[in-house]
Length: 319
Figure 1 (cartoon, helix red, strand yellow):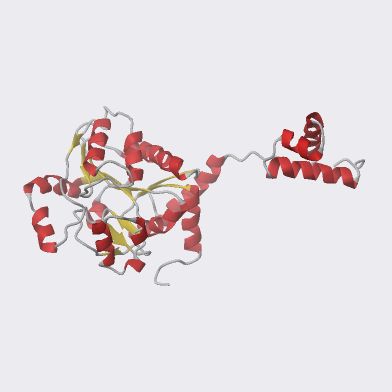
Figure 2: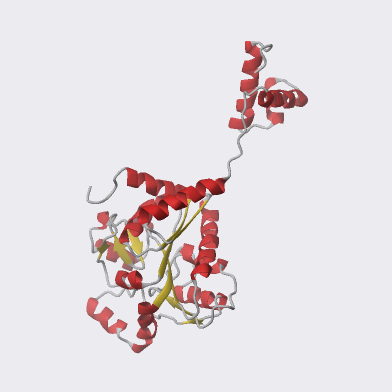
């Protein structure tokens, strides 16, 4: 810094720099507020940079995000991880969908059975899929039954149909509700030929794409989902996955009678990709990572940092 400047001059450089760089005011705002000409404000901002009052550093976010990806992969022994920059909720799902669509394409093999979970973020993944012609004989199946779509997304069979079109594959539909009221009725339903044409493919999953719900009564208006939550100690539920529940340590909690792929079948799949973002999804993500059946994760920076913070804080493991 120039030794010739008075303390008052230095204070002016600091003030203008704080207004411009920290408060986000324009040069016009500053000139009007301080009674200076705009050229004078511009010269003072340049002087602040030249004399070291302001140091501008350009940070490559890809390096920062890559470091978080590596940490998550090492911590949870994942085969793959993509962490995108956080953004407003309406933009975040589309951003996650683009990352997960790209990852799914990289994992596909000819003849794969691709399982699709009922989730608005999984729907964004399907919408982001390119049209593929070099991966023949793919079958696309729902991972659960379902009636109305979730969070404004289409019904699960519609999402499966769109995914099959994009992947040049064959859709196999599941015409069943997500929850059946009575266990004996659920058992009979799952043995019906029209249902087993889909469910028997769950034993052959090559790639599965799942969303992660928070498993809170306040987050749903579905009476059947609410009944399933109320059938368990819902205070212990950390994540909802394909109609089932997990506690914070990744252990399954039985609730209701969902027409869904089992955790055991997911564990046998070659790849299971979980897609979820936003800081509020950190708890479901941590539970899913501890379950042992997730091989790939797509999330955002806010959620990833919160997951790592929860780990450092010792959340879970019956603490």
